[in-house]
Length: 350
Ligand code: SF4
Image (cartoon, rainbow, N blue to C red; front, side, top):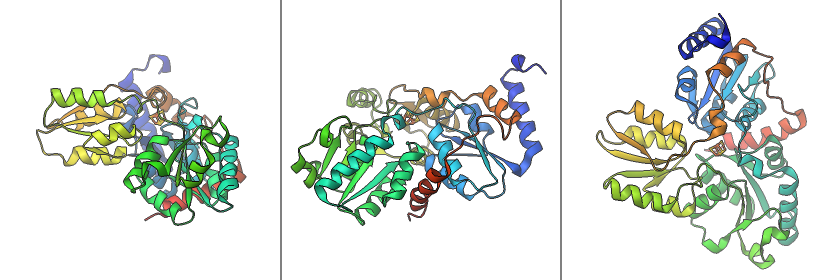
C-alpha cells in the first residue's frame, strides 16, 4: 500500500494491525489534548501525572510510544526501565511554557534566594512542563516535580522542608496553588528571570514564601474574565471549570478548576442535561462533548495547543513502522538519575 495515499481509516487499520502484532510489547500513551483519533488508538489516556505513573509502572512492554509533548515523553524516558525505548511521533512537539525556564537562569535565581535567606532555606519545585535538566536540578537540591493534579501536595511537602519555595516555570499554577494553601498575596512574588533578584526588592523576597517564575502557558493565559461574563450571560445556570494554568482572576471567577483528569471527572459526574463550559485546550473539550452527548459541553473560548496538534495518524503510523529507531527520546544518564529522584518524590506523594 502506498503510504502517501492512505486515508485516515486505512492509517487507523494499519496502526491497529501493528498493535495486534506487538501485543504487550507496545504501549501507546496519549495525553488528553491529543486529537480524538489518536486518543482512540491509545492504550491509556490521562493527564501528565497519570501518564508518568503509567510509564513508571509498566514493566512488560518494550516500546513506549508517547503521544503528547516532548517534556512528557522525556519524563517517561527518565522513568522507563533499561530495556524500554520511548519514542514520540513528532520530535518538534515542544511546549512554549517549558521553554520559559532553563537550568542556568533557575540556578542563578536559586543562588540569589539562598544568598538572601540562607543555605537550605529554599526548596525548588518544578512543574512537569519542563526539561529533564530542571527536574534534575530539583532532584539534586532537595526538591521535586509536580503536575496540576498534585501541586497542592507537592507545595505542602516542600514547605515541610524549607521556609521558601521557588516554583517554576508556571506562575499561574503556582499562584493558584499558593492561594488554595492560604498564602497571603504579599507572601507570593513573581520572579522575572532577566532582572537582578527577579525584579524584586530584597526585603520583599526575604518575606516571601512562594517565589513564582514568570512563565505561563499561551493556551491557558488567553482566557479572560470577560469570556466568563459573556458565557454566564448567554448560559445562565451553566457550570464553568478551568485549568489552573489560567490566571488567578479567571480561576477565582470560575465555579471550579482542576487538571484535565479533574475536568473529565467534573463532566462525567455532572447531571444529564447540564451545561458545562470549560477553559482549556479545544481538542479535549470537543472530545468530551462527543463522549457525553447527554450534556452540553462548550468551550469558554477556542484555544488550541499547536504543539499537541502536531501528532497525527501518519506520524504515529510511521513511528510504529520504525520502532526502536525513529524519534527515540534519549536523556543523558547523569541528568536521568537526578531527574528520577525528583520524579520519584512526586510519585511517592500521598
Ligand atoms: S497547553 Fe500549554 S503547557 Fe500544555 S503543552 Fe501546550 S503550550 Fe505547553
